[in-house]
Image 1 (cartoon, rainbow, N blue to C red):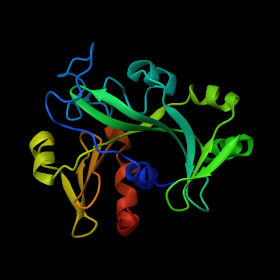
Image 2: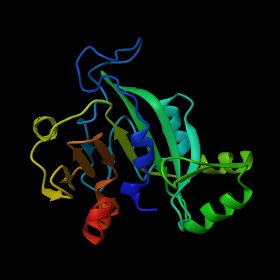
Image 3: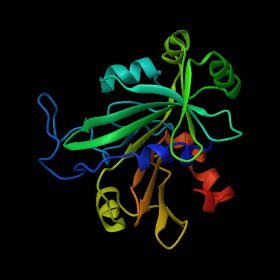
Length: 224
């Protein structure tokens, strides 16, 4: 399933809570000035670190150890697609930011297909997208797979000016429509989707893996 499409149903389900507002979402034991969405460290070798994790390098078990909480793990699949394994946090503190977070696990299509055969339950989400709950044995196996991408869903609308203020000028700007645009930061492994009519989406990968975000946009921009 193309990465940019794999989180649409979860975006539509988001509830409105504050995002990117200093003082909102502070929690005991959480430093409000650390692990913010715009604090991306690159290592000069194609890797990066954001929210205390390294996309493409750490296993799901390691990432969960950093983020904490009890996320939901499932295969998310559109019709006629095998789908992808996604890990969904309904709410996480990212510095002073409260956000919904989705981790995409790096699993081969044949492995996902096998897990679908053993799945214990499937249900429809928005439209025809399906959420397929994994067997307990597969949940354990997924913990040893690497997390290739991190998506952050803001729960209030952000405009392009705010994004540029926080992240700087993008290397590339790809409009999808007159109200939706992708702001691409390949050197940081970041794609920010700004949507005038919906929720914004921040997608992070290791800079070396930026093709995972950009290639689908070039192939079928209208679908994104």
